[in-house]
Length: 315
Length: 115
Ligand code: SF4
Image (cartoon, rainbow over all chains, first blue to last red; front, side, top):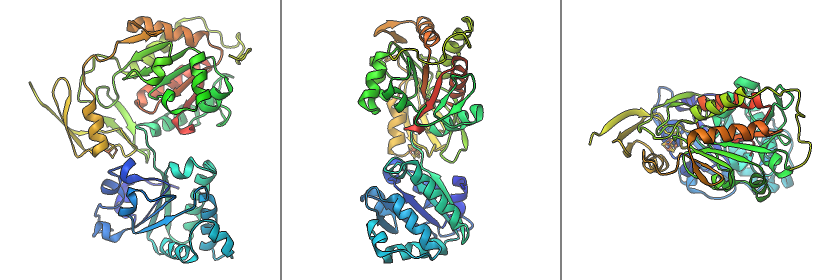
């Protein structure tokens, strides 16, 4: 259950940021979409909105919040579960509340505010989705948002970072039916994060050639994954010579998207926006290079069904 | 030196994807990015149109684009279980090409989201 940032801007009077630091990671989120804008429904802008920040530590975003709830690290799931019970007036023990690091009063106040809202929204960041519990945390928060709709309008939206990751999800969903963690090795797409997600694949050593575009795993991934990238032929497309390029067999410099390559990028609420490049680049765009590599591959004889569609020996 | 002004340019540095940026640019670099935040400004102003890096590198040595495309295609073609990964800092058009290529290769396909 989600919405666009346009709806948030015009209607949301109760904003919760959970496990994120928008003041530093999404600097214009407050001013452009979520807190400051005035609208027909919120004529006084910031004064008509309430912002609650849920995080494990005090970040710069705290200053922008009305209420700050400092949850104990790793207890997001417990907190969400307690809240889910509290909105339905189900009994909760004091020990269960104490475990979250917050007081009964704080939670009662939070629940009252949620219920009093006309349009509430949860923005959740990596502090929720990448810590203990991972996607179970996100799922729990989505459930809480769904259950809040018994009382008022509530939605949830992930705070995506990293340029066009949202676009990658959308394009893969459109083409394959799945957003990430896909294998085509049987000739049709299969989805299994954990098995087909890159970190796991690399750590297990389950690939014998890596094609990396618009990412720098050499700087971000755990060591065993990087070691594997060094063992197999790696191909990198990037506007810069990155950490990964340095361990790659092939690096191709491409024009940076949005600066000198045109195209489309998706905003975090899945609104596609055109890019308006300002510079001419001496390098080709990613799109052109990938298309040429693909065409070169297509000229080679088709082997689908002849070769083993798996690794016969571990690299 | 002509200064170009581009209205409503799009910043893709973070998920906000602000599309109201005004860029002032000459042939070589962007001089101003109005309305962008600190992160966006740094991103726009840090890029130039200069040829800072070689077109391509094969095994660490400079190569032409054509050679590199050939080498990349050969590595991918020879592999039994290639992996196509990343796709965050690029356009949807390039992402679409990646998906098609992965499909033809019988490859693994994954983005930053799975991290
Ligand atoms: S201008 Fe700032 S807030 Fe807007 S997309 Fe760029 S980095 Fe994000």
